[in-house]
Image 1 (tube, helix red, strand yellow):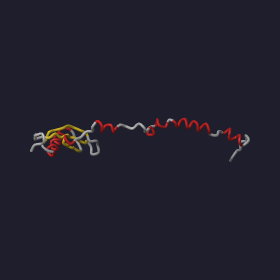
Image 2 (cartoon, one colour):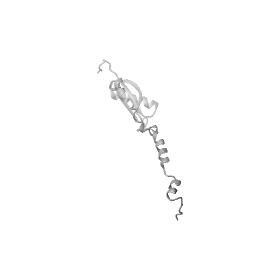
Image 3 (tube, one colour):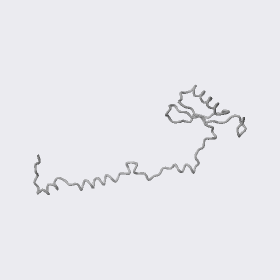
Image 4 (spheres, helix red, strand yellow):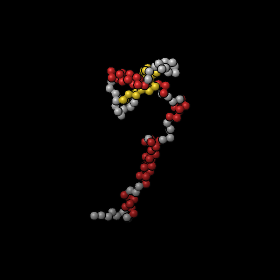
Length: 120
């Protein structure tokens, strides 16, 4: 049985996780006649190197990367200043203005004719 290029072997990319909830990481690629053999070869490789929680093998031809035009959709929008503290810089000025308008003790006392009453 041969693939489209007339070769008995296909190229597979191997990914692994070190822990059950860890990130999937690319490790290496290998040549194998089918997915089952590719998985066995990847397992054999990891048994000699390091412990892993999961191994994935994928035919290299089935991995698709984004085109240049598709990558343009990933650019970050710059209209989200409200998500960072620099977006609230106006509040300091607003608070200062509010504090200046607050009533102080002298002004309140002037309303009572300057007499301070002791409240017990």
